[in-house]
Amino acid sequence: MSDSSTGTPFDSRPFDTRPFDSWHGRALKGRGAATNPAGRYERQTRFAVDDGWDLDEDGPPPLRTSVTFEKPRTVISRNTSPDVPFDRSVNPYRGCEHGCVYCFARPAHAYMGLSPGLDFETRLFAKPDAAAVLERELRRPGYTPQPLMLGANTDPYQPIERDLEITRQILRVLDAFNHPVAIATKSALITRDVDIIGAMAARGLASVGVSVTTLDKDLARRLEPRAATPMRRLAAIARLAEAGVPVAVLAAPMIPALNDAELERILEAAAGAGAGAANYILLRLPLELKDLFIQWLETHAPGKARHVLNNLKQSRDGNLYVSGFGQRMRGAGPFADLLEQRFKLACKRLGLNAARPAEFNPNLSLFKPPPKAGEQLRLL
Image 1: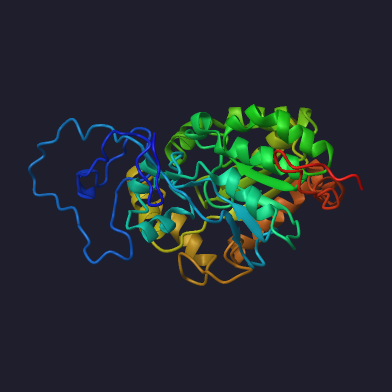
Image 2: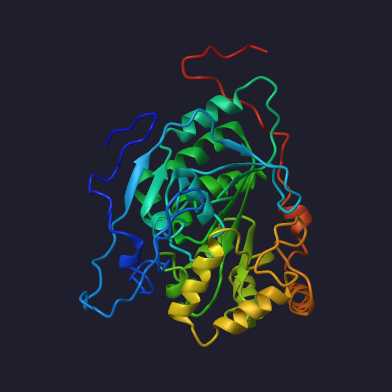
């Protein structure tokens, strides 16, 4: 393994360089997107055309995952969005092998000249020095702590974390600094770090949100092909709650006519596992994600495609997506209003969010940079 300022492959196997039309309209085992279209900044776009010569009867071989190391100068990202309850985050990875077809982070791959489609889930980037860079940033004079989000963009516990352990190293730094952290994931791998997260939670420094999109394992396999099964996510909620960690369930995204009927069942299952809070998001389809999701519907749920899209348009002023703050997460109109009412009634019945002010407010008073290695301790 080697790295550089520009990044070099962690996996020495070459990238698959076939044009995206080799995969067009086909469900690939273990992958979410059905195509690999060019990003919005590329000058050329390729289109698949069926010429009647079905020569590739067995389909293309499986796509391999490659990981490139990056050496960032900073790792804390800032935001001023009123739609999210944090102003800073750290993302150990870019791209995500979970392959969730609905992932709002997919369009970010276009900034690197890559496709938000299959490239997003097969050509990944990792920041092995993230913990050391974060420590430098936390030691800067005048730094003021606020909850730091892990998993704001891509999942910090996606499969490559099992070997690279970048998220675990970051948690060690936050633990040493007594810095509050909130984590969002759909991976059961988070239970590996329950020793650190549990100890931080005991000091009021950690909370976790676990995404449960559906309880239907077959739908989950198509929507989120390399993520943990729904039952394993519920087991992760139970393990975290058992360790004293405040856990919220994220019923997200809610997709009309596909998984929205499960909202109450998801909340019930999570509350039964030990979740104390909940949230939901109506499916978001920014930029290239619109076409990717439509292609997924045509491949995996063609009979529901029109119903899904019509309900989304009804909730977004006739569009598939509206980017305005306040509406992009929830939508508006009859369907969106009913979804919100159902969510609130279910939470009230299950006691979700009732204890949120006490259990999910982080303790900011403990923050203190620890002595550097070899640094003499002060007497006063």
